[in-house]
Length: 185
Image 1 (cartoon, rainbow, N blue to C red):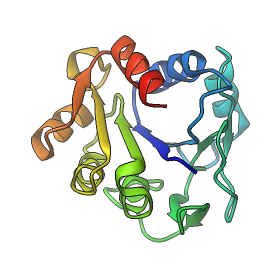
Image 2 (cartoon, rainbow, N blue to C red):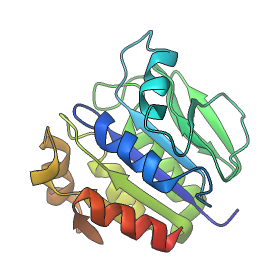
Image 3 (tube, rainbow, N blue to C red):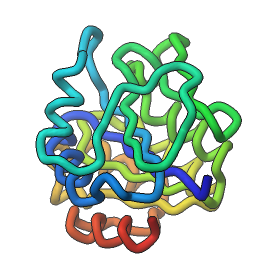
């Protein structure tokens, strides 16, 4: 596998994520794993919402599921999503991190360990700082870091936290993010 794209978001991030999945399309060459701060009990309605614009179809990740290109996975509500041996997902019910489970930091940190320079990490809109520490781990591991600019976020707390914790490679609008991901994918 050439690499992995990880995306983290919470409040206000579903709309840009839907746009991103549609723009990347079903033939996007990198597998995509995302964490959103979902309340317990969130089900197929969330993945249906993300899939409503077409493109790369999302599904909830399952424990020990192989990571393969052409798919987008969502960390299920009330489970941390991790990367195991660079080849499979692992789900965990370990305690909340940053008051949430799933945690963006948990996904980003495990992906940084597994993929290093072959990792692309993206943060979208969010109402907490979860994701900033993980983005720093990706940067330290040599991965590509991209953040949606705070001005383009419905909730800018995550964008502001990322800006305080790490100098990302790109802090740009959604159209520029799509262009970047198509170029590096």
